[in-house]
Amino acid sequence: MRRVVSLYLPYWSTDRLRRKSGAGLAEPGPSRDAPLATAVPYHGRKVIAAADAASKAAGIRTGMTATKARSLVPELVVVDGDPAGDLAALTRLALWCGRYSPFVAPDPPNGIWIDISGCAPLFGGEPALLKDLHRRIARAGYEAQIAVADTAGCAHAVARQVPAGRPVIIEPGQSAKAMTLLPIASLRLEPGVVEGLRKLGFERVEQLLGTPRGPLARRFGRSLHARLNQALGHAPEAIEAVFPPTQPRARRGLLEPISTVEAFVQVIGDLVADLVRQFVAAGTGARRLDCWFHRVDGGIQSIRVGTATPTRDPAHLAKLLAARVDQVEPGFGIEAMTLIAPLTEVLAGAQHDLAERSERKADLSGLVDALANRFGQASLYRAEPRSGGMPERSVGASRALDAPHGRRWADDLPRPGRLLDPPQAIQVMAMLPDHPPAMFVWKRKRYRVVQADGPERLHGEWWREAGHEARQPYAVRDYFQVEVEGGGRYWLFRQGDGEHSATGPMTWFLHGAFA
View 1 (cartoon, rainbow, N blue to C red):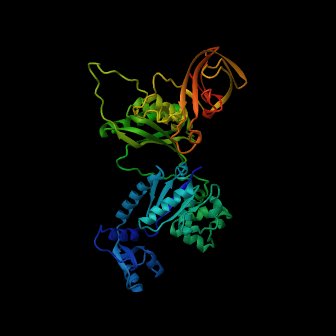
View 2: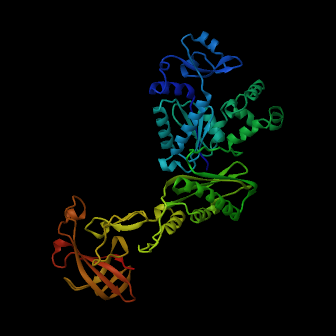
View 3: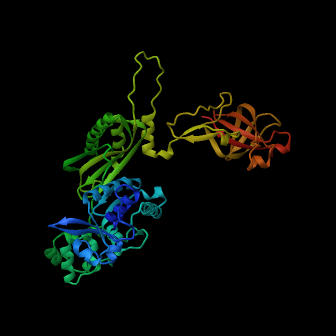
C-alpha cells in the first residue's frame, strides 16, 4: 500500500526571510511583529507573490499590487521576492527529508512530497514519523501542515484544506471518503476551471462524483477527471524524486516497455557498469543500492540490496540485484530504470602481494551478501565469546563480517556449536559423586553413553547482584561431554557437586550438542 506525505509550508517565502534575518545570514530584516510580504515584477508593476499570516489576516492577497497592499496596510513590509531562491531552498529541504524516505520531491511553490511506503515502521509508525517531521520543521521556524494518505492528490488536498494544527492521517482505504467534503479547488485544477465549475454550482468534490463525466470533460477538458482519479486512487500519479548532486546514480530510458526477468537483468548490468565508473572516479564502493522500475502507468517498483563491505565489483552487484527482480510487478511494462547508491563508503585500491608471501584469507563477503539479501540482515550473525562465567552468558552475536575483538574460547574447554536455551531437564543414570552418566533419557528417548569426559566444574557467578546465582552463591554445575551409541555427542550437566545439597538439587540437564 502506497503512503504519501504532503508537507505544506503556507508561509515558505516569508518564513525564509525571517529565518535568515534571525540567523544573521542577511542584513537585518523585518521585525517579527510587522506584516511581511514579498513582491515580484509583473508587467511593469510589483505584485504580491507571498504574504505571511498577519498580512493575510489584514486582507493582503497574492496577485495584488504592492501599492494597493500598502494602502490597505501602511505598516506592511514588502521585500523583493526570490522565486529561484525559494525553489532552491525547497529542494534542499526536500533532500533533508530524505531522512524519512529515499523518495522525496519538491512540490513547488511551497510543498514537499515524501513517499513513506514501507518506511513508517522504522520510526515506530506513521504517527511517530509525522510527529517527528512536524517537530523538526516547527523548530526550524517554519509554519507547516502535514497530511498522509494513500494518494498524493488526497494528501496534498488534506494538508492544504484541513488546518488541524497537527499532522492529519487518512487511514488506508479512506482517501475517497476524505475527499468528498473538500472543495473542488483542492483538486489542483487551473483557476479558470475552478471558476467555471463554481458558476455551474459545483463547490465540493462529492458533487463531481455524482455528475456524468462526459459533459464536464467536453467543457473543461480531461485534466478535471484526471486529477479526480489521481486523488481517489483510480489513476497513478508519479512523483519525480530528487537526489543529492553527489549521490551516484544511473538511469536508462527504454525505447520499448519491458516486462521479462531477462530484460531486467540486461538493463541492470548496464546500470551497474555506469555506477561502477562513478565509484571508481570517487574512490568509493557501494554499501546499499536501490533499483527503481518506472512503469508505463506512472507507478514505481523498487528493490534494494545491501553489502557487508564496500564493493564496486560489477558482477557481484549485478548478481545481488538480479536475484530480487522476481519481486517486481511490471504491470503493462517498464519504460525506464534508475539505479542509485544511497549509501557508499570509501574503498581504497588494493595492492596485490607480488611475492605471494602473505597468507590469503577466504573472502566471505560475497557469500554474506547473498545470504543477507535473501534471508535478511537480522537472520545472519556470527557467534563470538563474551565475558561470562556461565555458558549461556559467554556467547554473543555480532554481524557476520565485523572485525574480531580478540577474545577466544579456551582450546582445552570445547563448547558445543548449539546451546539449548534454556537447558532441558533429562533423566540420568550415574554414580555419585563424580562418575559420568551411563545412560540418559531425553524426550522419551533412551541414550546409552559409550564415551564420556568430565566433569568440568563451573561455579555460579556469585558476584551478580540478582538472579539465580545471587540467591544461591554456592551453586555448582558439573559438565560432562558424552558420546552415545550412534555417534551423537552431547553436553550434560548436573546441578550440584554430588555431595552437598547446598550446591544444587542434583538434577541433570542437557545443555547442548556438538557437531
